[in-house]
Image (tube, rainbow, N blue to C red; front, top):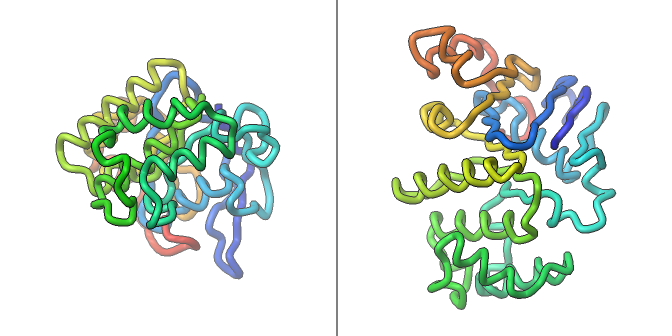
Length: 240
């Protein structure tokens, strides 16, 4: 479970995240939506301890990320698809992550198979296509068999088959009782993937609801989203 309480972040005079509070519960896929610059990525970075909040708190399983003894076993994240040394092989990258969190070496090949990269395991990751890079990032997120997943725009670079694959994977993971938070700018994709929606604008919570409830507000989910976020677009801090 993820809990944020009054989460606030400024970059100089810019208020990027404004007293944001929500819970991400296990067993469901929760979509994290908002216009570009709304604070989605900044919020995810604070949950993972990459940015320090100016006020409020973020906890995973009741603890701050920095207090987790083996963080990859508790929370898996895809924020930057190319968060690896380009000269390392896919297997080498995952093996280094596994060693850092005392994850059995056999898990590396398991997640490579799960994301469809077994045949490319020995290739330098820096030569991967965008779609393969995303799959490697997802493999890293799954490496510790975590209870919580944070995925920032996971369908970027994936072809239609890959999009169906990640959609099914997220639903399977949620069905296993995991908490899955996924950000996306593709409203139609969230309609097919998410159970719940957290919608923010200018760093503030606009809605904590279900896909069905938000869709019922207008002719379509996209129309409802546009109506809800009208006037909240614009750069507020780090790109989100």
